[in-house]
Image (cartoon, rainbow, N blue to C red; front, top):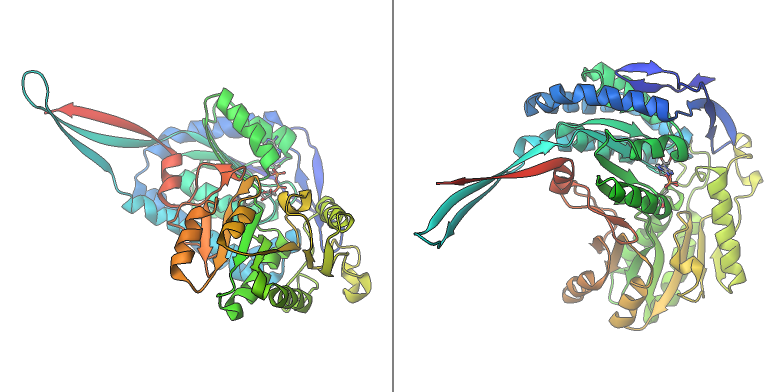
Length: 490
Ligand code: NAD
């Protein structure tokens, strides 16, 4: 059985406690590897290593940092098949999705930040003010310096993609890092560590420590030598991290949960809107923070859209994530499978009408090796009170609820009727309404007539309980650097 190791100072190490946790293949329910359960001692060692490597890395020319990140991007691409298989196996994610999206986008993250640092604009302001004794002239310029050791904590749904989305900007801007992937899906982070070494990064620049959140993650967050924490995960954990970082006066970026509205007006091109709604609800079994999990449909086309979405959900090819034809695999853990099942039971009890799904995938319809896996059917529910828990709280699984609305005002009220504000989609043929509605929706990302189109240069993140701060583009470069204004009287 494979043993995953911590990666500190470019060496693979056992955790100090010698304690390990099982890594499960969720499509079968079987254990296939062991992951370190690191504690504060391991985090201390990783942070000390990262701290020692920081001055040299911070003064390494940007062109050299860029070269190493580009080399890492090349290596990710050269190992695409191995990484895709590892991601698919560890997550229950269809292999075609891992190969076509997760891994290529991980390389793209590296490439984007490797080149962004070469072109980032500087800031300069000329002061020209009246003053006693004659006009005052000064020039201001802003220096941006890396902060030090960045603590990077990521979740299990898009493991390599979200980890590289943090490592790339942190390291590109001259920080060193201690990264902790989810203990549920550590496999591709482990493979990435080997590629970091092969790429030739100096020891201590990128450190990866494995373990759970309570012991290992919290030790990173609370470490005195970690001045900046970038976290992606649940709102409950994000809240604690925000409080802790606030008390310790650390910089913190929180990318949290979502309950995203997918709004279809009756003038929309339904030929585009319906298949996109199905994709938005069920990609990666609904385990994407940006999934359109609340479908809002204007009354005149409500029945038609509801039927078509349920038909689209039933048509998804559910099966072994290894199979090339599979479009819908297993949920990523037993605990998550149970949470999803409980939320559907609650919807049923609250009077929800189940149009398709609403139960685990029957074992007989799966290949023999997958009968112990965590497969739950794509599920479409209507008829719930928009104020009920199922409509307001994140399920993060293959469950979409559908609500009718009469007009733009009601659509906006429904879209904004949760504590979350990560993303929204609006489908309409009226260009003025599209802009108007995008402005009204409380979400950090709004897609018009599309879903999940990501340009890495744009700010990314949520409003309300979906997060604090933004990632992506210049926002990430700013987060990982400390500005200092220099004012020179001339
Ligand atoms: P989670 O909050 O349970 O865990 C996320 C990470 O934090 C894991 O690595 C975990 O070990 C660690 N962690 C847990 N407790 C910790 C603590 N006390 N201190 C430090 N670290 C701790 O989330 P999850 O279940 O892994 O991921 C699913 C959640 O992530 C969903 O809510 C989803 O919406 C969210 N998510 C958000 C985005 C985004 O960009 N906004 C992207 C993907 C996922």
